[in-house]
Image (cartoon, rainbow, N blue to C red):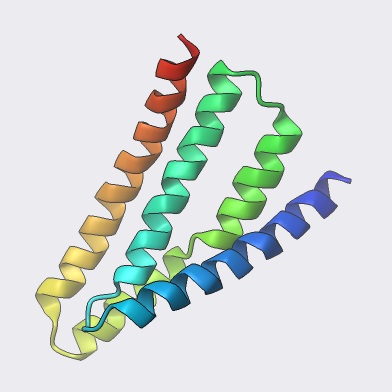
Length: 124
């Protein structure tokens, strides 16, 4: 049953990514892949919240697996971030490529840590 939940939530996450990506891209222009960065950072924040809820709030392992591995795994897209980076390099946008790689990594880790801290503060 857990495998089915992870698969279903992965599909929901991927569909959500598709919608969010389309909404952001329709409102922004330019070479920088803002939609992908926003998706990866918001997904990392959500994963941090889920992890915090598991650590401090009693969120069960099945829900964590379904939502963390399933939804967040389907929603976030680090492979697309790397393809975006390669495209920026190919277009001669080296600074933007470096900003994309480093910015995504730093912001995603910070967002995950923030999510854990938010839950920890709310529980105490």
